[in-house]
Image (tube, rainbow, N blue to C red; front, side):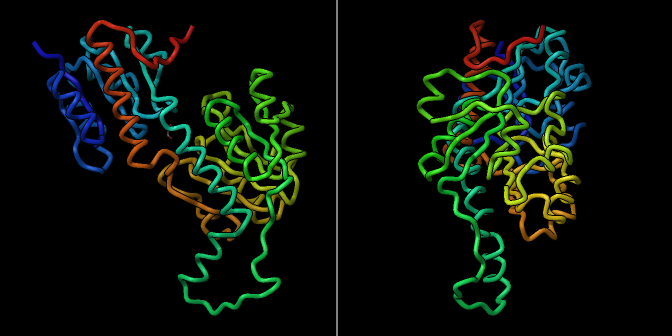
Amino acid sequence: MKPKIAVCGRIPAPALVALREFADVWAWETDEVPSVEAVHEGVRGVDAILSLLTTKVDDALLDAAGPSLKVVSNVAVGFNNIDVPACARRGVVVTNTPGVLTDATADIAMALVLMVTRRLGEGERVIRSQEPWQWGMFYMLGSSIQHQQLGIIGMGDIGQAMARRAKAFGMTIAYSNRNRVSTEIEAELGATYLSMDELLATSDVVSVNCPYSSATHHLIDAVQLAKMKKSAYLVNTARGPIVHEAALVDALQSGVIAGAGLDVFEEEPKVHPGLLACENAVLIPHLGSATVETRTAMAMLAAKNTIAVLSGGAPLTPIPVPK
Ligand code: GLV
């Protein structure tokens, strides 16, 4: 008998083809996020679930799937949508998609640095609104990033890829992380390890690149924002709730910091209304990994993880089982 797999959102065709060759597949095939009821119905009795970051994998979903479930393969590197301990209690393996989205996400982070420091969102709004404008010596001046310090919070793969890009643009690199990266990587990136306080106080751009967990919930709040330079910018391409969005709105409105570039929001797809009114905020709708190539690679990796586990092998990119 073929195994059963539930795919909880639309994924690129090559991954679906690979899964269908191997198993009986129930797949949600439209771009809307399925209702919880539809997902619970779809996962009933399956051996594997491919979850998207909009799929809440909690006790209720795991119960709906039942005891046949062996693996949850998240089509994302972040896995805060998954109750990993609940999976572990049931012996369900959890996998994610590290590596394949590193460059795409670092590209978006760097794009946000350029957009916010050079006021590109504002500029685009002027053109599109057909407001009169004229080249001028002092018109819409931004800040140069050369010789400015980029402070990276979270020096994993994406943080390092971001550092490489920023270095190529002439920035100097500082970082703060749970652990220091190797001296080879520090040397390659010219990166200085700082405490969070030092990083916030000295950086011209702060980029959030760490995973979201209870430990990083509201890591950047009013107190931390107040430690930043008035001329500094904040960029977040990780997860919305790492930044206290209401506090950020206050900081942007009152000049505590100069601007922000955000790809992620606290309650996606909602965006704090205060942010919409901030000219000094660049806001984009969670596009970090949104290229055809990257999304295809993510879905293929999730499919390979699923097939590996259901074939009795080891997954390629498992999430460590919590202790
Ligand atoms: C995207 O946000 C991801 O975690 O893959």
